[in-house]
Length: 337
Image (cartoon, rainbow, N blue to C red; front, side, top):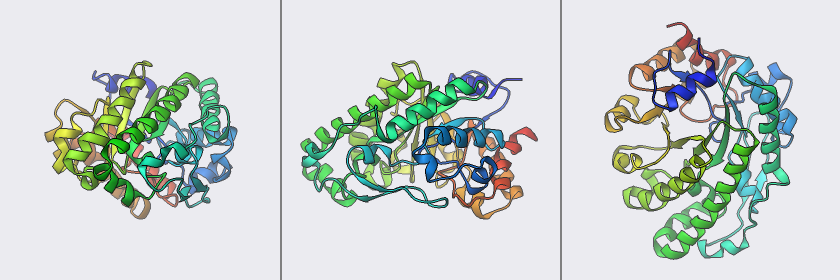
């Protein structure tokens, strides 16, 4: 029998595995629930700023048979905070979120602090990955980055940011170049700390908001700059995009990531029809995971696999009150077949 790391590696390389993998990467796709915290005896928000606790919570996700990976961090605010945004660290049931922006226009990105890897929460993540690398073997360690558009729109008012992609196009591109450079540095550091692959979640970079033209010009362009740089580090990448894909399947297919992931609004069967030959991940409803029951979750998980999912995962970040038995039902649906 393949180990989880071997299974995921085969799938991401496009070779046959014994069954689909079952993962939840971390980052925007947070997998830590109250049930996992209670099992581990380690809690958020403390684990957001403590590498030992962060690693232990990531371990607990695997050890409680929720998913077949370790993944850190458990939010998508680190990059914005380290560049100057103020962040509320949340609670045991609420994730961290930005509460104060740094700038009011894309032309003001000189106000930003370049990412440092020697202190702050970036270092916490790198140290947690190093701990996981030393202490684990069978399951893959997934590092996480907030995508370029989502990071950019976390540092200023999103509605202004979207308008200025058109009105201040040259400045917007300069801003996105700066953001992407910071993300590349953080991603490379995660790989060097021991991450086996990197997941990039860019929920604000959706085609529903940007439209096909700006999705190609800003989301695809800068995600590809990021994935190209990371793949030169000899690691695979996962890219998660939120929102409806029908207007932008052509542009999505231009993403150079090894794996593409979508939320539950995208029918997996439809995605498979439009993205032939691509490795697809997803997309069990997080609403069902929080408010349904294990039987319903198993049905949805099996439908995802039947309709073309190569890697089974929740469609987005888990609601932190999601019952442990519901979360465990995703993986158990594969083991029962």
